[in-house]
Image (cartoon, rainbow, N blue to C red; front, side, top):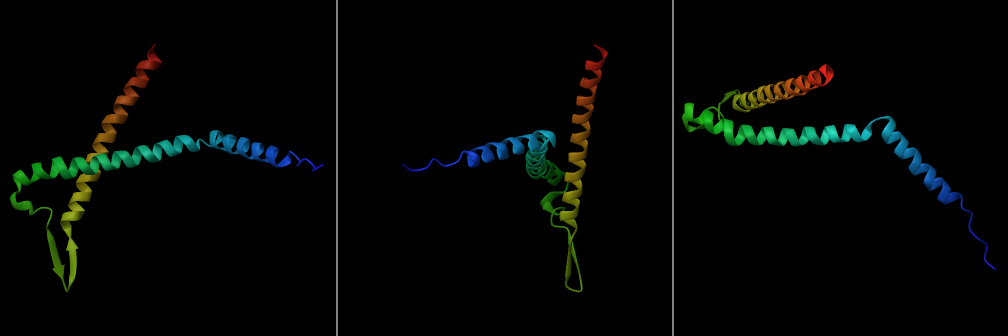
Length: 115
């Protein structure tokens, strides 16, 4: 008659997963992951917003996309000022949107406290 295998490996696996879930809960890893994913989605949205809405509006004011292609060369080194301006404008738009969103959240939080 073959011997039954000990149940210890199964108990060890259960303990491992129990410890893993405890770790995830205790250190808010899931919340952090949600925050990182939300940040990436927000970045993609802002990039699309700047590229497909803001730049075309800016090109109405400054025709021929001269703003994006603004570069200068010194001794063979190319300085892409347009990319820097694009990153700066994207940063400002993200900052403004975050400010508006956080203000709305804080306002709602204050309303909850008053009740």
